[in-house]
Length: 182
Image 1 (cartoon, helix red, strand yellow):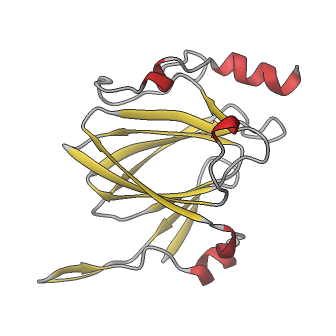
Image 2 (tube, helix red, strand yellow):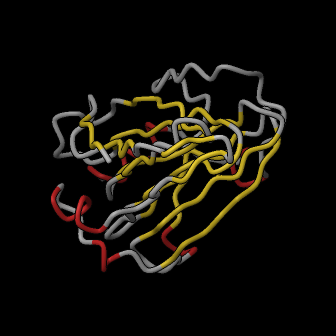
Image 3 (cartoon, helix red, strand yellow):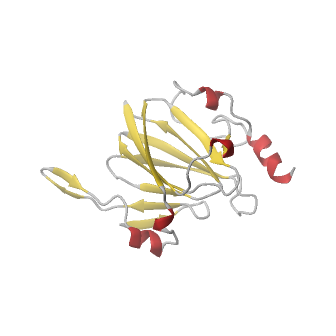
């Protein structure tokens, strides 16, 4: 498994090396030794979750107040455009975003550090997304920013066909950043 740095501080891409043959493939999806060697504490991940969505669905942009939440995200079926936004005021990449294609062919896993917003759009008929999260979920800490916020200017590849009521009512990037200074 190779690990790649990205344009955003502390965001990592874990790139497995699947073993393919006439039966299909076998791939390691997580390796505690590799994670530890890159500064992650494998024992800190306390919850695995999975979502399934259809083409055009957009989930996000979501984050957590307080101590935040780190995630390891991978697409087990289909393909998504996964986007992370650095919402850490002290970070040199604060306010910047980066997009990653995650799919069931390359099997990459994205490390989303604490203090980031996270969202994705489904690019295929259906996609299953798996998350490994380092804190139990507390809805009181949830924060959402609109996927189409003009200050972030994220270029989503497809029209947004499905959006949850929570995401429809999400606040702006400006509102979120005002919380940090207000």
